[in-house]
Length: 484
Image (cartoon, rainbow, N blue to C red):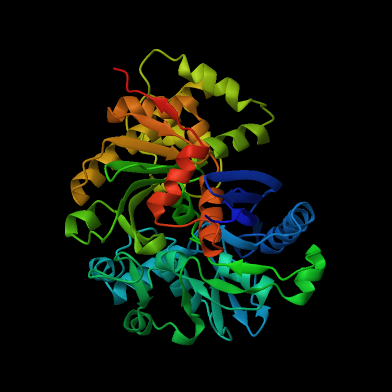
């Protein structure tokens, strides 16, 4: 019988962050937020950046609230979006981290593929092509002289961990998204066959300095105790450890998908949608590469076999555009109206690269539709319905491909994250896949973060399946049955 206790999850998404307290015990799992804050990028003369110092200030404020509410806090852990990083010289950060939506990566793609064709990269790292993967960003950085003087590269959660503890590490699930880790095809690290070590040969071929990549740690490892000055600032009176979790937010989200069998698929639906299945070993076929599926590291050595789909970014960026025009819409109103649309709905390719950068999303969607001979959505309601229908259509086709390529017979679809609250999206996904959809929990990433900490602290035990049973007991999903 495990004792009960509380841990803090620092969960940073691409548009907002939160600090959550997670209370875990025998058949007990409860979360409550103690801080929420926006995560807004900043465009300067040299490009689009994350406001990492503001994020860190909010993390410290959130931890201060957490410690005030729970003086006996057992540990804390950080997860965030993937691929982005900071370069350090000694303890000094060399410039604000670039945002993955910055335009600078195109040159890095070209120079990387001139040295190592994508087919060869895929055989080695198992990653789908995304123009902002870390190896392309680092290639652009090298060309611009940005690596000169750098002695360490830290991904975003590891950077915050360094500021909190003084320890430099690279957490394995997030490091697997850099494209610079070897993918294991035999029995690998942990309990499955996920990702191995830094690929020294690839790093050398790309002309990157091997010395900047820190040692790898697995989810559940202790990173270190908070630095005395940090502990003092947040009001921690006893030692507080930082623990590594699945620090890529999708890795943590997948931990908390309440899957009951191997025939379930997941969609982690937020700014991005990550659509796929969990496997014990990677799929590295040419068909898989051509379909642009990725094999990312999961907790306990599992493989997250999935595709990135553009996600609710299309909707949030459209709302932002209308707001800038002075047209105030309430999203629940637009979604309710969109659900009532009975005529033909325009379905467009949500993954067109034209939608990647920030900007006037409604105008870009209309231009895309006109250029591809599609009916142009006439009103904001039509546009919202078109976005949701197009996302659900992409979800359905991606799940069919995931099933065929991995040999998984999918019988149930779980939607977690913010998109699980979007009733229209969930119902259309059920309709278009012909499969039941189980929606929730909303805060899957924070829950997964909490559960891996809890297991490390002896508050929870067992495999991912045991942890997911705890999630299913605590958060009843909403069921959507497919309609014709």
